[in-house]
Image (cartoon, rainbow, N blue to C red; front, side):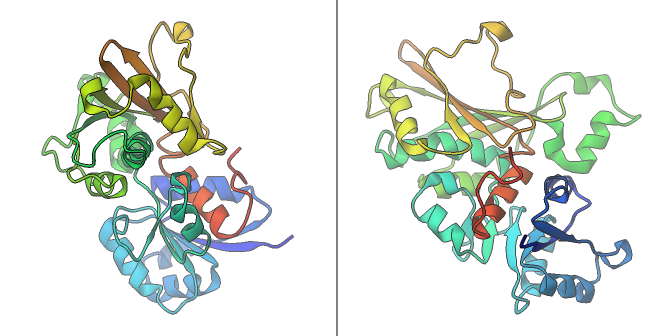
Length: 314
């Protein structure tokens, strides 16, 4: 069996650990592990990049930019999990389900940017509607996203799980109230919108899981609300991981609630369309550490290496 050499630059962070966990049990992958004392040594990091077919960058934005520059001439193919390169035209946006050039470019990409978690949910709902002409590129949208606290990385995990945890954390809390969340540029650019949505992320007292919602009314649509599911079915038909849920999806088992933890532990993303009168609520549910992060990164790697897309992600 051919073993593909992989190096994770930043394997001590939440995303890096998720990727490492997914790859460590695979027989077709050889993980290169840099000694702890050399983890921040540019010369040592570059040597590991030279040995790797694929290098994952699981670093803060500025460090990811510096690591990408460091990799020049090493021959490694980069997959960046940071925000740094998601709207850079020199990088391929790693969301193959968007079809066409996204998947074809990913196959030959040397520089892939993994989508943000909140952005994945929003883009999965909005881009197909823009592409189908169902909504205008000039539309004014709002979006809310409920996430588990693991999305905030080690510091937020420690805040929720550490000894100094306070009772205030029991309630869901909106954040990024400056309305300048770092995912907004890719949400706007990848969907082809002329303006970013008004976005409210909310963190809840649960480890992982994400529910992104986009409300609309019939006046915002150029198609009938009952036609929306058909747009999604056409866009994602045959997808390994994105599922368009039935119109009459039964929420009875959960007491009428839609849980953000529905797809935890998988790389799936479920799309729901709820209708009532002239109102429509579009929702996507997925694991923020799966399709929203580490799982998406491994999916990109599989495609780049010509492997079956679901390898290691079942």
